[in-house]
Length: 325
Image (cartoon, rainbow, N blue to C red; front, side, top):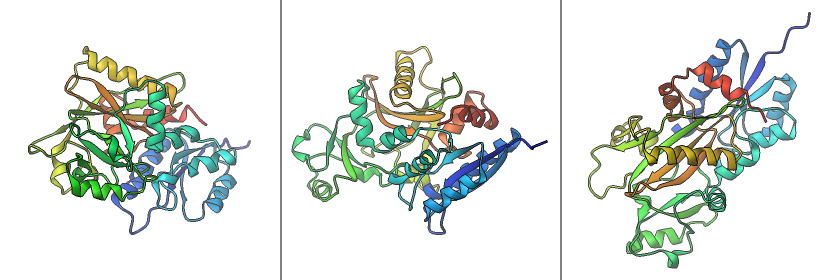
């Protein structure tokens, strides 16, 4: 009798000796996914998408997996090229998990995503090209962000500015409009909300509020690169995730959940995703980013939210695997 195929390839970007923490983190995700699949009775086999993506994808195809768990977060060490992973899988008719190719391309490009949010009337902060300084208002604060990169790459408190800061304005004017943009800085609270899909199922997981503990007056309350990846930094130690707010019966809670479901629907998300919000002093939520295939390392916000909701790793991975592209 022919043995039933239970092979799942876990495809991820190659990690190098010089890789930054946000790139090397993918190996922790690979380990979590592989262990979950083994517990579920699958044969999990990690494979790299490296400097020769064409040859690498042919190696995947040769193994004839049931499907691929897509953990590709960069190609040629560029986050803006991460869509190439699912593009190659799609072109070779290999089924894969998570966010579909088109949705991944759109959500990775923050400007495209924000334009789509405007189309569907999903509140998002006003945004501008870096060469549109004449449109900025003196009474407001702004933040300059990378168009493509994720994981808070290139983002720190120095990115927050107003038009009266001539030094920052001159620096911003030199930035490439294809790689950076300006967004209105929403003073207030920040929430990261994870969503778990599955066959006929969508769970908006408990909202995680990011508490900026003991930040001195004037210090922007943002999750920059140091707060996310530098474990020795004050920002990392004093940025705390809390699932105790908001009240589940509050208007804010219902609005956050409704917006997450709209993002899932309108952006055609699958498997798992995360929506990041800023909430102003009047409790108005604004989507600042939609993350298809967010980080699922053991200490990630997604896994923390799923655990808080009562899901173990095996259930998370099984649910993600139920919707294939």
